[in-house]
Length: 424
Ligand code: SDX
Image (cartoon, rainbow, N blue to C red):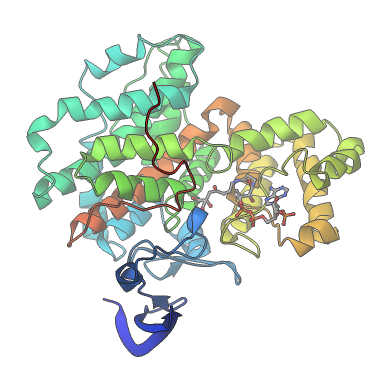
């Protein structure tokens, strides 16, 4: 629970003083409780929530100036290199890393829910084959609520917990099928003898004609690490969307579908796909200088750079770059786009335009290069992000429902027409 500091901020308005309580967390800035501003007949005003703490949470902490990201206190680089994605899922959901016994039980529980009702596969047929897989994911994940209406009492903690397992377990199956559908290949069903990341890559790339398809362990390890690097990130736009939808009492599948929709934007999770398109557009290192001039003229953004919170290196980008080097070396790939990306980074880290604006590579800058090396098509990059972030979304949804909450209902500064009558 946050600690009342005993300190108060004093707002002086129209000669009156309003005392606003200040609370402290365990890490990060104190917060000023502004709800009493309403009594003064004012709203606070913070478009984009630049200075707004929307809730209290124990799940993830970010220090944007120092480039720190902790999940339940553990640094992201340690989780990405010393724990599996499912161990990180357990940590996000339960607050502690699992014991060996808890880990095996959790893995078994997830494995038992990787299949989906066979009717779910029919939903895909309603889409054109050239549909963007994120469009399919929004539709199919939201539709899951139609299959679990007898397990959707959000006041029942058991219903909430089984829903979390179902979503974490089924999202790789639905994601792989969104790819298979767009390439005209038959759906491949999950296998319970494979690890979480292996199973996903198996469902992505195995075909009935290749019964002995083996997932490359180097790629499975890289995939698992990429999942971990995307698992959660405090109150980002999509997580805030899930919390806002959840605050109305909407069912968790509908809330996660709302999160997938918000993630799709190129300013958020859609950036990984946009980075590869940007690298394709630049083409070669020779064109970098001209492209950077376009960025400075604000004609384009440098995708994969900048962050609302990080004004230093995104710690995930560092691990992602290290993973990129490992995967390309292991596969013997000399990807010219990596050289291009590194040239962009070098210039951005030295050019005053970017340095003044504290624009550093974020999680999306190098992820696309690894995903391409794994064989994932560009249109699937944000689907992978949504797959991995599902545990973060549902962890925040569970945290919100574990205690009292109010429906989220912001107000506005109205600058429209004053009242007037229809003149006929
Ligand atoms: C994710 O919130 C999260 O935690 C998200 C995320 C997560 O895990 O959930 O981390 C995932 O979404 C990462 C971000 C992926 N998006 C991109 O890579 C797209 C490119 N980045 C930008 O669109 C932008 O940096 C944002 C959207 C990420 C942040 O936008 P802000 O907070 O509005 O940027 P800002 O106010 O800090 O910008 C300051 C200045 C502005 O210029 P001036 O008006 O001062 O002249 O920097 C400029 C911006 O125009 N700027 C950029 C830029 N990002 C900011 N200029 C060129 N290229 C960019 N990428």
